Length: 306
Ligand SMILES: Nc1ncnc2c1ncn2[C@@H]1O[C@H](COP(=O)(O)OP(=O)(O)OP(=O)(O)O)[C@@H](O)[C@H]1O
Ligand SMILES: [Mg+2]
Image (cartoon, rainbow, N blue to C red; front, top):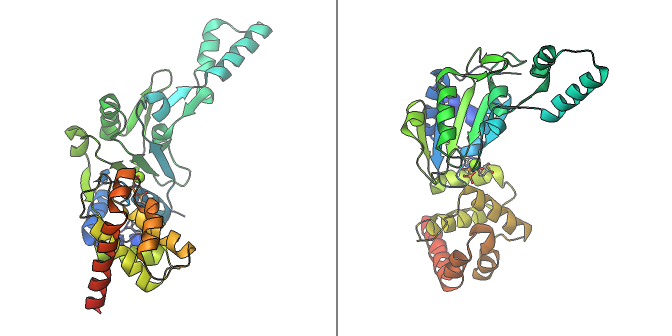
């Protein structure tokens, strides 16, 4: 069932917690404003920091349909908005020809109707929803397709409508909740950003990352989770090609639990680095003496904090 929109920043924080998302006040504020003022939320950040998850959690906790448009290089209107079902149209034409009972203009009117329209995510998000509540439209990784797609999106975000020439204009009765994410492999056009509220999703600090692990890797021993978090946090200050995100922290913890570890040791770190780092150059750099040094610091820090 659709839930009402949160009435305050505190409510928004509560909503995220319900969805097992650990957020700080600044994210909850951006989200609250975007929901209450009906503006898209533009989330930018490194890979694996929890951007996509925000859209998913929002749909789940608000009881809205999640419509996800996964962007990729070369994404075009026919994959994002609509396309005609050519093969079904062709069959219709053949059947009409075989029966020989229809004139050309009637046939044309017939095959360009909703029955032959394949609705892609953007069109779906603008249509009336059966629940009566607008869905969550997650436009994921907008930095991947090119500028023409951004220009098109700009139009959609301005009026929440699209035009299908053969049918007419589809306009949302109430605008969907829009969450846009970008990994910032290139800058998104200012005109898009201007229509949105912007939020940079950063790596969490140690306290927040530990909270995330408690939720997402509940089977891990407390001491192991602390060591993992401290290790990852230190690793993020190194000059690596690709720093580990929260996703990798969770994966690594789950891998260590699977190996029945309750305490990190240099050997285990070395043999499981591939769960944490995804580039051979990074692994080669960290494996061995660097990993041992970080682990030593981690254990000394945790002992001092006790
Ligand atoms: N603050 C958080 N609270 C709870 N879980 C989190 C949080 N941040 C990240 N996660 C978890 O980390 C994983 C990765 O998150 P997500 O896929 O949203 O990252 P992303 O920023 O979209 O990454 P990418 O850029 O690679 O798509 C998910 O399993 C998510 O549940
Ligand atoms: Mg993502």
